[in-house]
Amino acid sequence: MEKKKRSFSALICVAVLLLFVVFLENLSAIFPQVPQVFMPTSPLFTVLKKAAVYSLVAVSMNLLNGFTGLFSLGQAGFMLLGAYTYAILTVPTAMKDQVYYLFEGCAFDFSLVDMFGGIFGSEGAGGAFSMVLGCLVALILAGAVAGFFAYLIGIPVLRLKSDYLAIATLGFAEILRAIFQWQKLGKITNGANMIKGFPTFSSFNITNSSGVEVLRLSTFVPFLISSICITVIVLLINSSYGRAFKSIRDDEVAAEAMGVSLFKHKMLSFVISSFFAGVGGALFAMYVANAQAKAFTSVMTYEILLIVVIGGIGSVSGSVLATFLYVACSEWWLRFLDSEQYIGSFKVPLLRNGFRMVVFSVVIMIIVLFFSQGIMGNHEINLGALIDKITRRSKRSERKQ
Image 1 (spheres, rainbow, N blue to C red):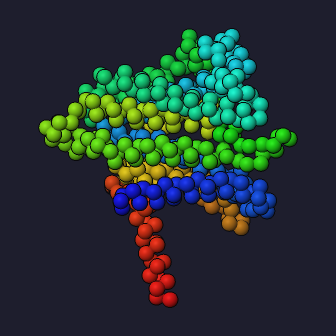
Image 2 (cartoon, one colour; image 1 turned 120 degrees about the vertical axis):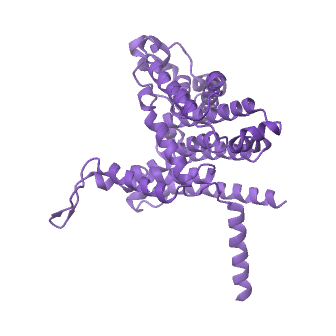
Image 3 (tube, rainbow, N blue to C red; image 1 turned 90 degrees about the vertical axis):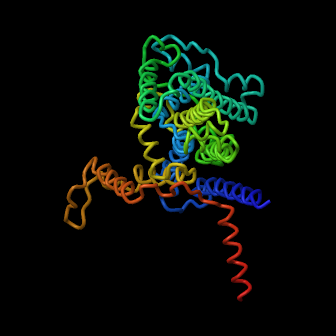
C-alpha cells in the first residue's frame, strides 16, 4: 500500500512538472514584459529541450551499463538508426523530391503523416491528429529498428565481456555512420546530405487561423515523451527482470546458479536499451530539425557516458539530474568564457573562443575525483517519500502554532 502511495505521489510530481513546463514556455505570451530569459528563443528552452532528449538516452545507457553491468559504447549508432527511421518516415511526400534532389526521389515514397492525413483529414483538428499519430508511430518504429539491429549484433557481441564488448559496439556505431553516408544508399539515407523537412518540436505549437501561436508545446513534447519512456524503464528496473539484470551485474556465476539465463537477460537489456536510444535519436533529430550521420560520432556516446558517470552508475534520477547540469553548463552557464570580457577598461585574461571547454573539463575532472560514485551513487530521489516528509513537517508546524 505504501509503495503504491509513493508511486502515485511520484506520478503527481511528474504531472506537475509537465504543467510547469507548459506554463514556463507560454509565460512570455501571458506576460509580455517578462525577462529575456523566459522568451521562447532564450538559451533556457534550448537547454530544456536538449536535456530532455539526452536524459532519455542517458537512462537507457544506464540500464545497460549501470544495472546490467554490460559496458557498451554503441549508443550513438542506435540513436542514428532512430533519427534516420523517424526522418525518412515523416518527411512529407510533396517534399521528397526536394530533400532527395541529388538522387531523383526517395525509395520510401510515402509519409506516415500524409498516410494518416488521408484517413483523418489534413486540415484543422484532423490534420493535427494525423501529425501527432504519424510522429508517434514513427517514434515507435525508430525504437523498433534500433532494437532489431541491437538483436542482430547482440547475438555475436554479447558473448564478449568488458572492454571487448565496448570496442565491438563502438566499432558497430562507426561502421553504421560510414554506411549511412554511402552515396549508393542515397535513395534511402540521402547519402552524406542531411534529411530535413519532417515535423519537429515546433510543429506541435498550436496556432490560430491567422497562423499566430496561441499555445507553445515545443518544450513540453520532449519532456512528455522522455518522462513516459523513463517511467517505463523505471518500472522495468523494479520488476523481476530488473532484479535479474542487477544479479548479472553483481555476480554472473551466482545469477546463473539461481536460474537466471545470462544470454537471454543480457540480450533483453541490450535490445530495450537500444530501443529507447533509438527513440532518443528520433527526438534528437526533432530537436536539431535534421538527420545527418556525421552528427552521431563517438564523441556523442562519450558525452552520454560522462553524464551517466557524473550522475551515478546505477541511478536513474542521478542520470536525469546530471544531464540537466551537464547541458546547462556546456550550452548556457559557461558560454561567457568563449568571448572577451572587460571590467571597466581592464580586459579579463584567457577568455577566448574554446576556453569554455577547458574550464568545463576541469570542473568534470574535479567531480569525478571527489565524487567517484557520481552525484547520486546508486541511490534514487524518492519523490513520494520527499512529499510525505514535507507533509509531516507542515502538520507538525501547524500543531505547534
